[in-house]
Length: 165
Image (tube, rainbow, N blue to C red; front, side, top):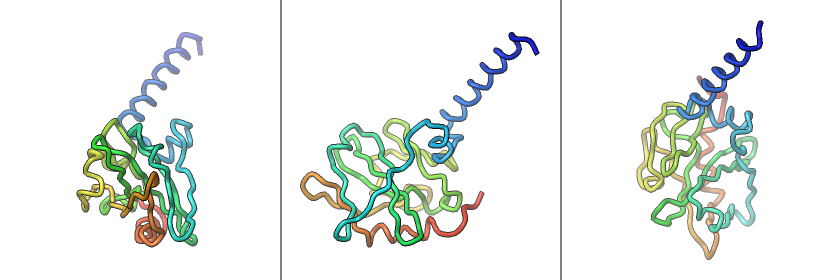
């Protein structure tokens, strides 16, 4: 093989990889493996609740977390919408949860990594069902977003058993 062929092949492979990334064709796990964003941060509860600093949400970027409930890992995300409301949802929906691909963010939208549906962040916790991110009950206490472990545990069925294609 000559050098010119290898350069063209590498450029084509890079364009294809970027196309997959931008189209949502890579799952969150694949993106994390490739180092395209940090994987979910593990959180633990104290006194029956997970507490997250509200100040970390002010940039409008979704933060992905995972909470261990027994042997079940429960992924969820939090994001501050443009109206200033801190929102939380399981990293799953009622339709695509068997694929366990979760959501990624594109500006003010969360995108299902399985079917590509887009959901404005201001609708999280407002609209439920279908492919909308499954709402996660949360409260604000002072400068913290508080999510009770009992509420996190309600999402366990989304993440039990093997993932389905």
